[in-house]
Image (cartoon, rainbow, N blue to C red):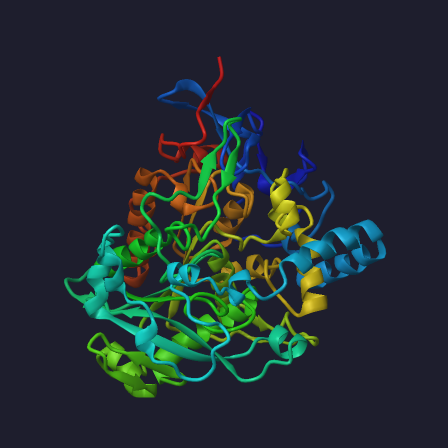
Length: 552
């Protein structure tokens, strides 16, 4: 079979350029990408036909397994690191400047930027039932509050929720970190003062160290765009419905019974890691849920927040906590109480991000291991990496970190309206220039991912956040322990088949434990050598709305 590599695809055509032609980055050998072999219809959340590979399944020997494929390919004669060089912050700002000269482009992308400007729609929520379902505190509240107002894990043990997560209440402290206003708030809204980032710190028993002992370690969990750690999800509510014509449609939330869907699954992920011995920091990003702030979409600032929270857990600076027994403490005393010892050395840390949380976690990893650039300020300044030695890797689920070069070939109409589609490069450049906002990342994360010590990726095969080629390329560049798990499903973890969610949870815990143990590789993953083999590693179970397509 004639094969091509991700490195030298040109406009969908097979070319004979050397493997290094389109990539300055060398690292591991290029991962082969066979040409697509079939097409299959995907229901939620694409509702269209997508290209795929033929794989034997229970449905038939020639089952088409679809996946999201990249839309932009480097020209055959390209020299350089195409998906990094052509989608850098500098290039995206230049593209926005060109877009502004074209009336149609300027109007189209300008509408997308305007539609997603701060604040989040729930910032001004007044419906008492919606506020209750979201577990929300006022985002414009200033100063210290009674931390007992924050909903606790025990709440979710009541019917009809009956979440096992509730059992962690006795080891959970409510925490609050003080953080600065972000550039958009300061420059465009004239806001001063600080914001308060709040969440739960769940103490762990220690991770098996591989030598008969245990070692304390921390997972920092950053949820996706709809994530609210204290929000209610009724067990019977679903993210979407299938209409009479077979198309799918997102259900509206908050509903009568739920603040959002999938929140119980995020809490269950925290419980799973804690059961393996990890300490957990589970928090709401600035501007939503139980945290304060006007702007919730600057993921670069949210990356800074992650690094600052990790440092605060060592120093106590800006930290306040409410212990399970009701004792409030501040500063170093609060950090010591949660650590159960001198907090200064800190714990080994892994960053766990889902969807939008991968943007914040990716920026934190970039700033810590590659370089620290102020892409959201009028004058961009890059300094050396932060270099926090406690951070040992990242776990990314439904990632956006491969950057806008890997936008899929046929975005949906909804993607295009939200800046997710083919206009994503213009959207990124325009938001940075006009609003001092960094939402979707540029190629900066991809460009420095080779410096990360370890990374785990999990995604649905027809995820819209990035084409499969993008996640494969991110994976390829990581030089330390790494793993990539794929499932036959779309972007949201909550709709993945439970069998696959369980597999992903098991692999994430195994990977995180292996990294803490200092392993160079973590056994138990499904091996693959090329794109088709990767697709074939997905278990033979499907997200329910998509049915197998079998070719004769």
